Image 1 (cartoon, protein in one colour):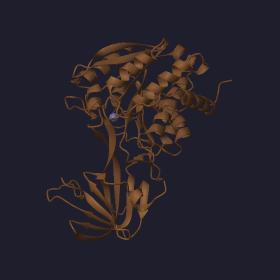
Image 2 (cartoon, rainbow, N blue to C red):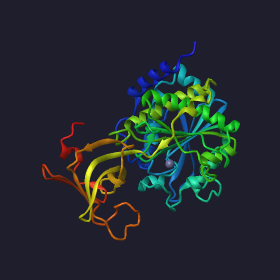
Image 3 (cartoon, rainbow, N blue to C red):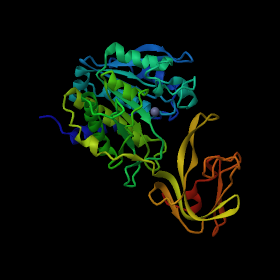
Image 4 (cartoon, protein in one colour):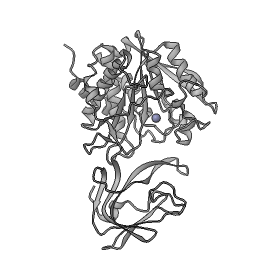
Length: 416
Ligand SMILES: [Zn+2]
């Protein structure tokens, strides 16, 4: 009698608690990752160098298992999207430690997994999306002008991988549909033509995405979104389907106050192991649940100030709401990731959900706007964005270059 998904989830969640790798930095670079892989390496996987990045960093791929279903998996083709790389370390640790169990045995005897953890090490070094040549390699699947894109294509072609997981992060500003909950993880079975047809290959990808989504739901109820499926022929997810590989894209999003995405990381690890098990047993669900996943909407902010008295360069602009979203920001002096705020919306913010909502009609916000600002929103002044004042206490938050001088909850005595 096969286990049901709840039993499988509970088992893997327990393993996660026991075997996750502690103290993995959010700003993970190859200098941390590769020694860690060497430390983990036993008989679970072998490592090969697939080629070099633009700046001549070796790019490794791992081979796990010896089954007859070849599966491709890669993380961090965008250097500032580290969550899944951190989850992969947990996955390898779990698989090693629980190798003799039925779940892991099924996976490694049925599947051969080819994993490229950190496809863009140059971007990771800088904490930037793009490669050292300033190219978004997820627009290079057809032209293959970057060495990193050529590496990904060659691993796919060499092993003729039948399935794929493409692992990313998305900005912390999405809700799962319009229900007011953040999109913790978003999924996509990408289109392979302009009509977004559901081909057999794409339908299979939707079945894998359904399975991933079912597991993510157990960690993050109602916080699973569906990524926009507009066709982008230059993206790997879309191109994979034309090459016959069924691919699911997993976007690590955000849930309130989980700024370093530890819960999202855990949801990734459990969903990837769980879905590999179903794939190995050829027990993927139908694509039905994929179609019920709500679309991503850009309605999540970190802070919302409702009914604030707004002024722009001291000129009264009436009573409005102002929403700010979080931006992960590399602090090179400490090599840690810190946080900026950027103005999301000024005006009616009633559809927005947020980590923190302040509804105190006496808050004053003054935006200091450079005359050359072209965005239409009062932002990006070289000297500062805005000043937020709570007149009763006289306390003030100054947001300069998006960074609040103090956290707003410290001023408003918010219990969190
Ligand atoms: Zn990405």
